[in-house]
Picture 1 (tube, rainbow, N blue to C red):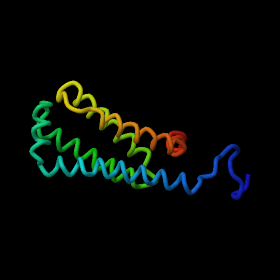
Picture 2: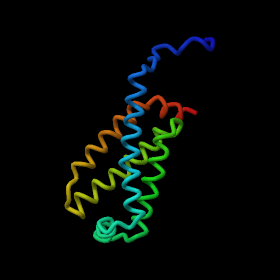
Picture 3: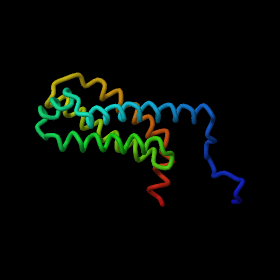
Picture 4: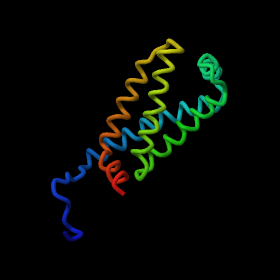
Amino acid sequence: MNATTTAPFAKPTSRISSVLTWVLRILVAGVFLSGAIMKFSGLPTMIAEFQQIGLGDWFRYFTGALELAGSVAVLLPAFSAVGAMLLLVVDAGAFIAQVEVLHQDWIHTIVIGTLLTVLIHRQRAQIRRRVVA
């Protein structure tokens, strides 16, 4: 197979597909970046929520750092799928905290998790390449 041929059954990436993937990346990065900023800035509601969870300020900063790292990774094409998986783990933790401890609205975690799952699915070829390499 020479450099100009594509692998069998490989689907060409359409412009619409690429734009949709970038829209998802930017949307997800914006959501988690704003969450990281709220955690790092010491917003009183964030402090109160993490005190209620019972893990203290270190966990608020740790969660903010994961959100920041995931937000940046999602915007870097080479690391986007890995960043989305990291953010999905953070979102799953937020869901558990909302349902089990905070007893607050948890629907937003489902919506965000769905967006992350779609983004991960759209980048599944990138994940396969990383696992095989």
